[in-house]
Image (cartoon, rainbow, N blue to C red; front, side):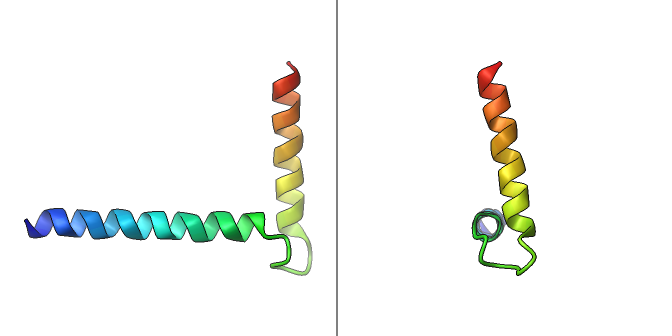
Length: 53
């Protein structure tokens, strides 16, 4: 039973870290150099190209 609880805690922690990472990447106000914005723009352009083909 404790093994199941540990797995559950680990998966919750993973979800939490993923949410933090995604919100960090999607929030262009973090980081003054605009690196996150650049990553998002490149990703959007790639998605648009894939949608066109």
